[in-house]
Image (cartoon, rainbow, N blue to C red; front, side, top):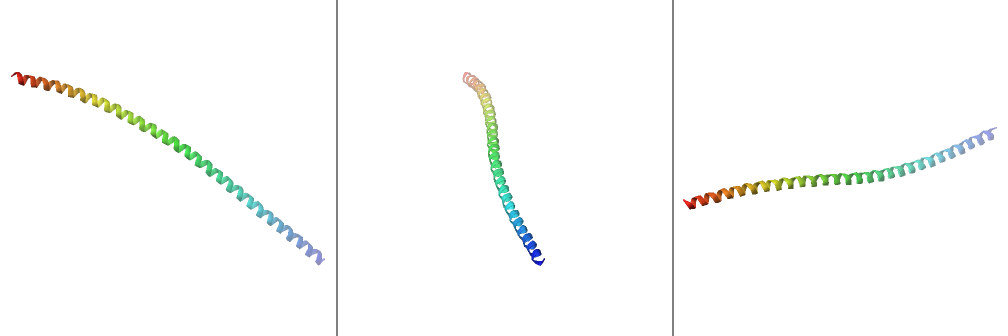
Length: 103
């Protein structure tokens, strides 16, 4: 009877040791899978961030080009206004000089 009890205890110990080993293997497998999934997620996130960053830079460049074009157009209009004003003043100055010479 004692031998039978010892044998059952040894069988239970062996079963527990086997179950413990299987649990450790399963844990390692899950850890490996989780790390792999995390690495893949990081790669996907980096790629997405790079893509979105590129789009954002492109959008900002377009905006800057549009603003530069608007500034250029305003400058050309202002230059033309100044040129016309200067031309008008030049005519007035020429008339004034001519009148002074005639006097």
